[in-house]
Image 1 (cartoon, each protein chain N blue to C red):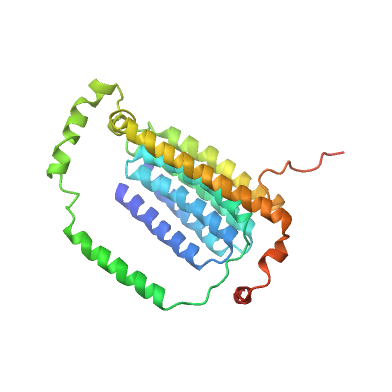
Image 2 (cartoon, rainbow over the protein chains, first blue to last red; image 1 turned 180 degrees about the horizontal axis):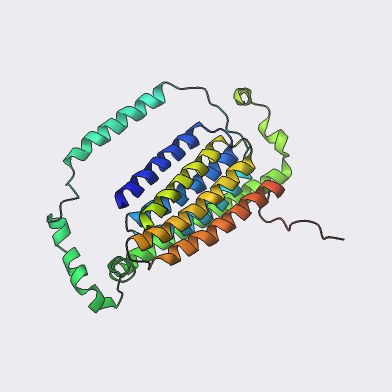
Length: 194
Length: 92
C-alpha cells in the first residue's frame, strides 16, 4: 500500500514538472511550485522521512511561495520565449552523460556493510540516546554531534537570505525611479514576447 | 479501510491537479492548489493511521496552516501587487 501511494505521488510530481515546463504564465508557475512542494511533503512522509517532510512543509509550502511572489513583483508576468540555441542543450546533454558515466565509479551507497556505513553510524545508533538524550537519531546527529557544522550551515543560509533581501530592496528602489514600461522597452528581445 | 481512504484521496488529488493544469484563470489554479493542500493534509493523517503510527499529525497541522497562509499571500499579491500592502481602504 505504501509503495502504491508513493508511486501515485511520484507520477503526480512528474505531471506537475511537465506543467511547469510548459506553462508561460509565471503566476501559474509559482502556484505549481507550491503544488509540487505539497505533494513532496506527502511523498516524504510516505517514505518515512518525517523531519524532512516537516522542513519541506515549512519552507517549500509557505516560505518559498511568498519569496517567489516577491520576486515576481520585480519582473513581468509572462515568460519571454527565448530564441532557441542549439549549442547549449547539446553541451548540457554531453556534460550530463559524462557525469552519469562518472557515477559508475562511486561506491554503491545502498549496501549496508560498506566501511563508510559501519564506522560511526553504529556508534550513533547505539549511543545517541545515552549521549544526547534525544530519541531521534537524525536530530541528535544534526544538533549535537555535528552541532558546529549545523551552526555553519545556518550562518550560510542566513547570509543568503540577507543577500536576497538586499537584492529585492535594490530593485524596488530602482523601480521607483524608472517606471515599469520604460524599464522593459527599448530592446529587441521584447519582440519575442507572446 | 484506511487503504481505501488513501486511494480515494489520491483520486481527489488527481482531479485537483487536472483542474490546476487546465484552469483558464489564475483563481482556478489557486483554488486547485488549496484543495491539493487539503488533500495532502488528509492523506498524511490517513497514512499515519495506515502505518499504525499516528504520531506525525503535527506535520499535517503545519501543512494545513501554511497552506492557508500561502494561499492568502498569493491572493493578496494578485489583488494588490505587493505583499506589504495595508489592504482595503476603511469601510464607511
